[in-house]
Length: 276
Ligand code: C2E
Ligand code: MG
Ligand code: MG
Ligand code: MG
Image (cartoon, rainbow, N blue to C red; front, side):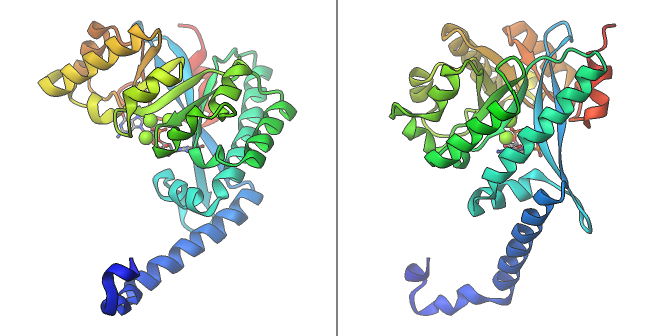
């Protein structure tokens, strides 16, 4: 950026930018500490079928900062990704998931596979991929207990490589979902390359689709494409009853959103799985 700004580059160091940089560094520092101190937990958002049965969960990272309180993932995930802390976060979250799964098991609750978000940054380096696989193995997290969500990004270009982490995970039997479908790069191109179990349609297309002809057409096409590829379709961000009805009519397999249930702490999960 400095080059483009040229002789005005002193503008890069305005007090505001200095402050933003400091707060970013502070967040990174606090996060590093918080990961050690057990400040991170998972919230679980159920996924429902057309009959409103809970058939899955998505695990979402939560951070309770000792002074700031809850820090939203939209704030700390990008910092974690750019600082490399996402690698540690990913490993810590697997440990948290193991603990939560064990607690539910002790209560006699049988939980369907939980979908864990995986950033491309966690898969880029061989040593990180190996640590992740080691952690899965050490914690005995098998394909019946965990699956993964990947956000399409420019990084998916790497999918052509035979050692691609996506194929490694699939080879071990883990289910994969493409997250936020429709908002990234070359969606259809990589649908052809990787055969995922699930396609998650981003809430950008889902919200208000029953009263928006364009959204409706797009979601209808995505459902048709996914089914033609033998994938299950999950609609994200379902908030309105009219959208739920429209999604069911289109044959959408699973729905997730505030209209059904917000992400809940682990102690509220057993009640969601109780029959009746
Ligand atoms: P995502 O994977 O697309 O997760 C869905 C996000 O949408 C969650 O936000 C969820 O709370 C929110 N959401 C669910 N239903 C609704 C709805 O009906 N309306 C609206 N407006 N929002 C809804 P959250 O928990 O803030 O997470 C944001 C993003 O942070 C996630 O997006 C995911 O990309 C990332 N993230 C969260 N946890 C992890 C993690 O453990 N690892 C990695 N790598 N990324 C994570
Ligand atoms: Mg996700
Ligand atoms: Mg998503
Ligand atoms: Mg998202």
